[in-house]
Length: 331
Image 1 (cartoon, rainbow, N blue to C red):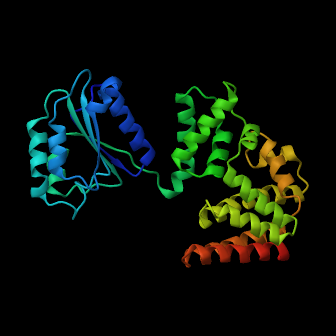
Image 2: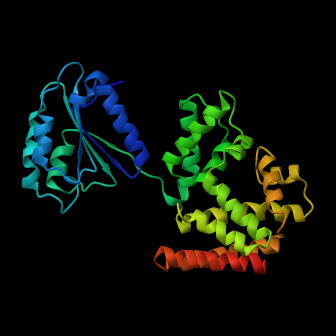
């Protein structure tokens, strides 16, 4: 591994990769035994450029180097600091930090490359961008990323399982990485399977599933009660999206089953590598027919539009409860 640059800029929309890069810099520069003296984490939203310069010019103590990390740095954002405010820090970077000293800026999002200080600093540092995926690429890239993480950790994870995890958990890399660690511990060296996902499924999806089961039982009171508990910790739009994901999956297999296709034939038709999820979805959807599921998805879409044009948790909760009552009494 190449020696870290004296000054590094980490930026981009991929917050997870930014944090991983920060941790790698700390590990490469700072001796754990002297971390209390040789590592400074500064809040870039409040720290002044002069304070950063003073910290960066302080010599390391003991073994290893010294690192000053300015997280959420605003020096590269238009309208935050004038060029003259940052000039002393720029001069230090151009002159060179003392031996063993390192300075890193971390910016979640973009930087303004037109700024005078940005141009001056970029020409003399190691800049690394961590870009996020385009909206239409997010799920595919999240699954590929998850499989890469599994390979790096020596965890056996198939593409079908990775895609199912993304469908269930979304594209948040923190959540996916934590779930991967949990499943890897449970698997103890064995391949992670769809059955394991069923056993260790995320609480959010489990609770949403219970709401849908109450709807299948035509029990609006139970559905509303479970939804209210869910909204204590989960955002309304997230809950609605999870409901739609589950219902779409049910509808897909239900339509094929109503055409007389077997479980194995459905598994092949949808491109799944295991019939486990097909069996699970058919069992989950047994209280609905395809027409009812289509009507349910239409109602979820209508509610999604209503949520996005309303404001306040009370209004959102009311919209969801009305939807649940309609689902449980109309379907």
